[in-house]
Length: 134
Image (cartoon, rainbow, N blue to C red; front, side):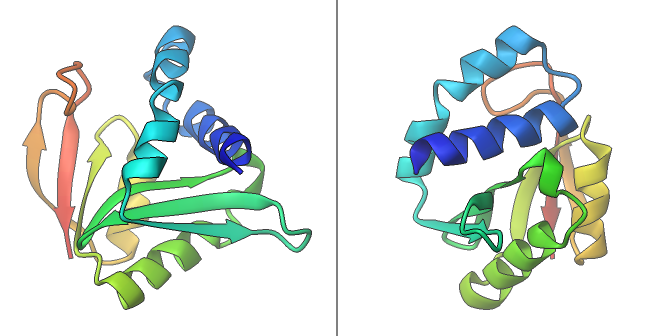
């Protein structure tokens, strides 16, 4: 299952995180299994053939991660996952890369508003984060 989720993650990141170089994606990918293991709630959505196409991670009421495979984008999986997380786990805040405007717009459509911006991500890299709340 971890390999399937890694494939979803990598597909999603390559389609949306244009600001990351290939070697940066490879470096981050090494930590994804640990992040998946440490998240309190991991919700996986599958297609009709029972293949994972997206997943959402929640810690307390914070959205830790939301990824949908590139070939499955635009089919409503992300909205279903986030709506499920909001309804069942009271997700009310998240952080998104400023350089991923499609994700920012997606979260805004679902009621999130930016309340804070940082110049670096949580690892100190020069990728600004937008912190959003519902």
